[in-house]
Length: 418
Image (cartoon, rainbow, N blue to C red; front, side, top):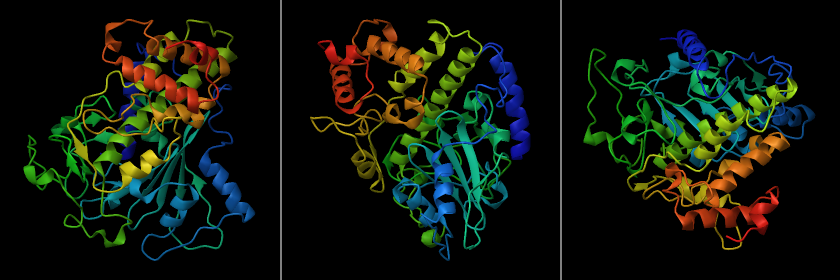
């Protein structure tokens, strides 16, 4: 199935979903005057392009991976974030296979995708506009530029991305040549997804995580059922799966995959909230209750309320250490980036994306309402059963970490005795 066909199907599902969705009751064009998606962006890649044009930054071209390593450095994206998939669900799906997988690298705002024989694909989160897509040709030139590209919107502007230009993680068992086999499984993935449904079409290295769908290129396309094989679990390295010498890393770290799964939907939720708020402001319809539904959804996801418990996990690389080291940390040395990986993803269940540019760029009134909702839960004043699993010690730790690391907290976070 081509990206264009998938995009058409997604658009149909989007129209059907939005009729009753909690997020909105109408379809909004990206060119809405309150949004202006086709206009100039201020995301991290747009900023890099300006530095490339001024000569402040240059990109170095390497024989095997072209501009990849230099681009990652310029965008402050660690090599250790590499994850790999053999599912041909991208713009360059025809090039992707079990022997020539597509690799993705990421930080809090940007993803970079590379596969041998193709161009580099970049998706960067603009704080106001959502995901902006770029391509970088893999040909040495004195002045490389990352060109904005709208073709990805065929799939990345749909119900699965919450009706905004956004990020998408799919789990679809795939054949050795990258063809998807959706009758064997077809899932949109985030931190709420059972691990038994995750990573179809992906490579996974590391130990633990239960019986997932990763590491299983399918030889027989006529299969009507999918069975998890022990040989595809607890894989230490990808070196025996394909020739990793041309790649920056032989890993697709399970810890990185878990973080990636969480972050992609979190970014879409922040974009959706921002869009809803700006449109309502523009139309003078923003009230104290008009965003109540999506505010609850954003805060619940921020606090991992519906997170699927995980079995103990051990990554295959230094991703976990490098990710946690990025901080920030409170006076007791704690960080929202500290991974747990024993029973849940993070030691303190509040997303590090609360520090992101997209969160900070929310309209002041909406960010204030979000903090108010967050405080009701963390203070215990909201006694809804769904928050019962948030232990008092976790709530206290989150409040203390935020007090030391967030400068825009409302006064109640700082003055109230906890």
